[in-house]
Length: 97
Image 1 (tube, rainbow, N blue to C red):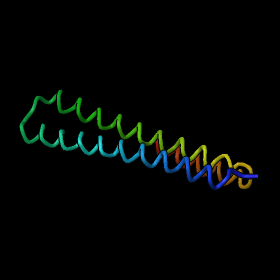
Image 2: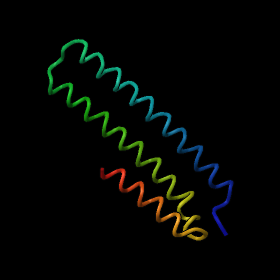
Image 3: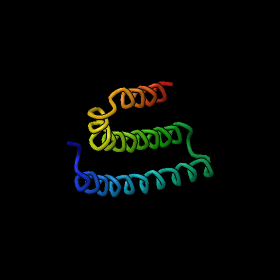
Image 4: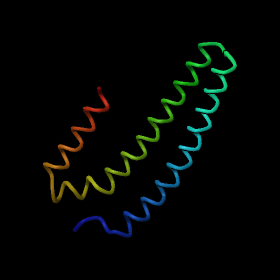
């Protein structure tokens, strides 16, 4: 027995709203970075803003990955374990490139 469609849909809608909020924050951070560059801000301040954006993207990635683990991977391991493992290994390799 897999994860119910209702659970997956409810969980996805919650994650979708969280992801949309994080994307809005990232857009604001990018706009701020662009302004800083246009205004010739201090290089360290620009780099700190860039690092904040990268951390925000990592946070978004974590949210989406956690959703995938909870809703898809758990079910895939029951039905298609080798495919689930291959998919996760490919992703892990991309993260560590």
